[in-house]
Image (tube, rainbow, N blue to C red; front, side):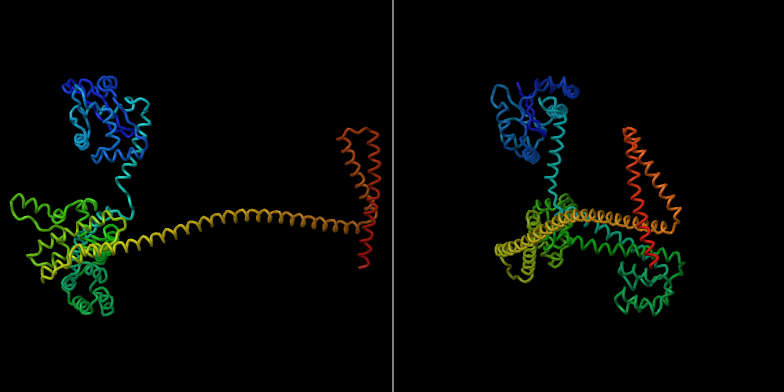
Length: 571
């Protein structure tokens, strides 16, 4: 009797499921596929034997990394040791979805592993109904755990570092190769098109980009004169060639061309010139990127060849994993397989043929030097891939070793031993790394100081803002006071004016005014009494007292007016 247990790795933890009637299930595989979708039928086939939840997100990430790499983690080992029945009458079989982890478990435990067939269908069903098979786990919690682990796993796999991304090198070298092809094609089109008008220019100027610049500059050859000789010299950088172009334009056999055709040719040639300028900028960008990502490989074999090796391998990590024999024939796969098929000679070099070393070597030494260069390229790529602080010290030393080996093949001069060279390189590299670290620390300190200053400025800005608000409030109060003063002054001026007008009036008018004022005072008193709850006797007393008060007030006003009149007459 076979006892099958299926191991399922979930973001929440490890689960072990016991499968009932394995042999019958294996016989009825199509029925199993149908019953997987039905939770009631699936529960009849599978039952949860054990569940081991992860303690934290970090533990889950460590376990998933181990499973993906085919390594048995300590948590998984402990879980299977405690829950998997290894000894007994029934033969235990462990079902695993991944063959890689299955092989590792078979080495670790004395148990037979099953991967395909029934196990795949049961794993599919477990993945579908996992949250309902495990008690206390909801579908929402399971999806959250999967999402969180997925993000952290992807982040750890990518290991994103902005300054050391070899993807940019792969894209830029591919674009550089494409630009070379396109510029060549477009230049040939400009040559053919402008050659109808000025065919002699092709023989004088063989360079593509220079020809396009000249086609843009010259335009109609009949308009060329001695005055345009200086501008021609600036483009061609040779007075003899410039004079030859001028002479050829005068005795050219080309056909006449309309102005609109010339405009189109000039536009197209300007596009080609701009593409050629962009190609130079891209090459400079590639050089700077290689010095950041793979400085040793760039110092040893050159930026362009190093970038092509990285691009062909897929990444710097893949290139570092390759043996030297693979790096040697990288890029010559077709020739290799053709040689293996026809039992001919295998190729000696691939992409590394474009380096200067193989071209400088003699024909009989090309295979030797390519093998030696491939060894050094492998060492340089591994140093670049796994070193924390990128330096080009090792690349320079490896280049010196290749130069010495070349001279040894030519003259027989013995090169230095590898141990001695590497000791020197390690010593220099430690010094350079320490210097780089010191500079980085300085930069970090400066950045922190700058941040502190900015924070202080922000704090000062807040206090200044409060002070400004206070000042604004003080200004508003001062303005209010000023307005009050102005109003008071205006009132005084009006009172003086009214007094002067009163002095000019006749005595009859004065009496009438006094009467009207007295009547007004009486009316105000009556209104006040109407609003209040006073008796008629009290009202009479109030009227008498108000009239008595009004009489001396009127007398004082009259006396003041008389005084003012006297002053005016005296003046």
